[in-house]
Amino acid sequence: MELSEAIVIRIKQIMKNKNMKLYDLSILSGVQRSTLSLFLNRSTKTIRLENLLYICEALDIELKDFFNDKVFENVEAKNWLKKTED
Image 1 (cartoon, helix red, strand yellow):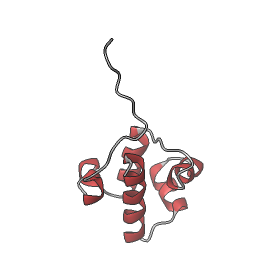
Image 2: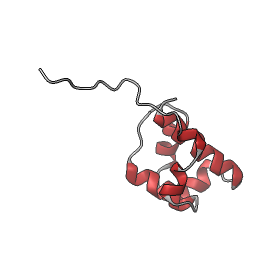
Image 3: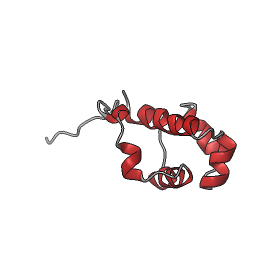
């Protein structure tokens, strides 16, 4: 599973547990709703680390605890090309 997909799953999981809607997350995190929507709907696969930190603060979870979940056990970076030395 791609890292970005695992992050989306984890955010949605915590939102569901807290009965939180996208609007609520946007207001509490300060991250624009359109930015959240694009990422959570997988229209974009990138999220700024700062925004993820704001999201974690809004979800009342530390970043280290956010990533301490089994969904991250087998993540990979797809489409990543390792540069080789010539």
